[in-house]
Length: 505
Image 1 (spheres, helix red, strand yellow):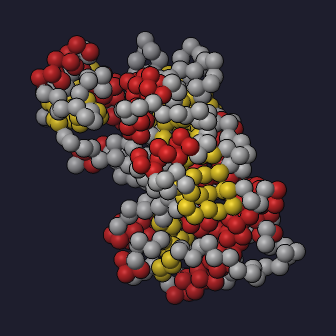
Image 2 (image 1 turned 45 degrees about the vertical axis):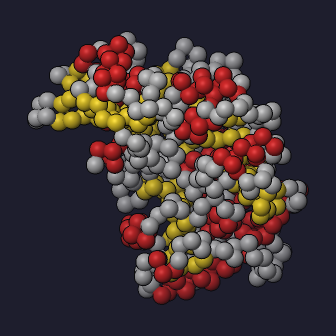
Image 3 (image 1 turned 180 degrees about the vertical axis):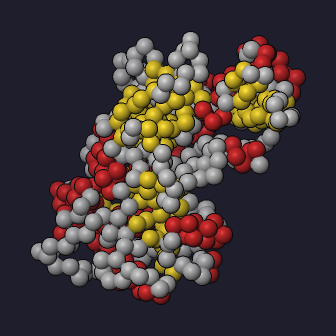
């Protein structure tokens, strides 16, 4: 039954087959319950067997689906494009890896996606089928999509492929929608070699080993979750405990009693943990790190003071994968940086200097994990480097420090204002929990700055007068927002990024 995985063109699947043979009873994935116990469990052997069985099922159902949609591709070797919609449940890794192993392309979409969103994404990528959990009824699936429930993904039956048979197809590709923090999302295409590269580099960077435990609160269907709660743990032979969302009654018992060694998170999660009344006993935790958005300094300091544990930062993007890591155990650790390049990653600072005194430049990345291209769009590269649009500089120890976004710069009377600099300053206000800064166009030549803030958890909403007074003490006059708006919440992506285009809309 392991023959299909052993002969795969994807190294990750061959690693999985090794784990299934060498440590068949080790837990690969399990679901967390609120009483610090584990719900459903998949051992490495069961995971490999379930993937093998689902591969054969896929060849049959997708061939029928393509035929029903008048596809020109038929037969067992035809490549299909399918949508996968599933929250943090153990069915996700089974179906995700089975689709790739069977040679089909998988578009991982948010578990919260509505029927209208699913239809739009299916039209963009040409998908003919959707595999989803039971919470997305087939009645909600668009008519053009064949609907297949994944609730039987763990069923294991005798495979059609004999143990000694040679069977191998090129592994499929992964499609992911960019976060769209500054504009409309694009669809990035990453091949099996890219996924292998990020799995190995990530496991090495965060020191993930056989027997380690990852607590996955981040969505496993997002690029961050796929890499840190699926690819890297399988590469290393670790186990993953799946939490379906940031549910403190479930999260806290497992964090303290389930021998968790790795905690990938987002800034809002660490802020919540920093505000707990009691200190957590995190004796087994070796790596706690944050991604998705810059980690505010006050959140880092509060968490460190409360739990005596330093948080690292991770840098990456849907298009390039995880590429830098700030390791708290490194002797040159800088808490305000995103650290150093991972294996197979080269960073270049383009010569577009925006703050000569500090040397801020646009960050460009070339990595083994980067995208093959955008779907139906040109992928502009500069000498093989992907231009991230982020601004930054290296500190004296070689750590990369992020300082802003190129496209977000606001022209105020000829002076360039970096919104992230203003946002970072405003986060120092004791009553501000989050802040986003954007331009307000007053005429064809005049822009002003607007700051939209949300109150810090448990604190009263700050007054506009206090915000303005604070800003004037922290920023040059041309950087001080003319307008302050207070909202209860701000729209965010699954990884915690503020979605600026939705704020502006």
